[in-house]
Amino acid sequence: MIEEGTRSSDSTLASLPRVKELLDAAEEASARAHAPYSDFHVGAAILDDRGVIHVGCNVESAAYAATVCAERAAIAAAVLDGASRFVACVTVTRDVDPASCCGVCRQLLAEFGADALIVNASSSSDRLRWGRVSDWLPHGFSGSSLDVRPNASLATG
Image (cartoon, rainbow, N blue to C red; front, side, top):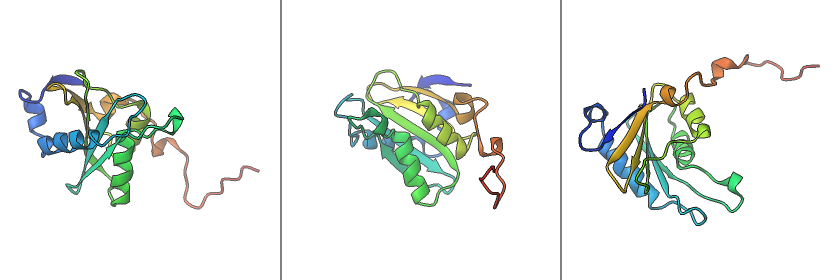
């Protein structure tokens, strides 16, 4: 279930360890975003199952398809640091309304933990939106959807 609330009044989020630290890390990362075209600055902070926080920011390109979302930047940093399971992903934008993760980011997050918490926040207000990855990407595609066998040939002929 996707829920909404505020930073100061929600007990559900208070149960997540280090939520304030994740919000602060994501907000700091958003200040470093490279968004010369849209001026849409996003920061992301991922908490892995080892308790390590990994951050990323969006990096825009004039060729929009080459743009990297903050969540994917944080995922790449986490993987580089050896993370394999995520507990939470917090994003922060400047908008009054928290912005949702895009579908590509939801897909990647699901591959590192469908039960991980996603929190979308705004640095312009105390509004929050949150839910589990599986709430944001129901019936997501996963490795179990593939017929992958170790050492299997990819040749079909």
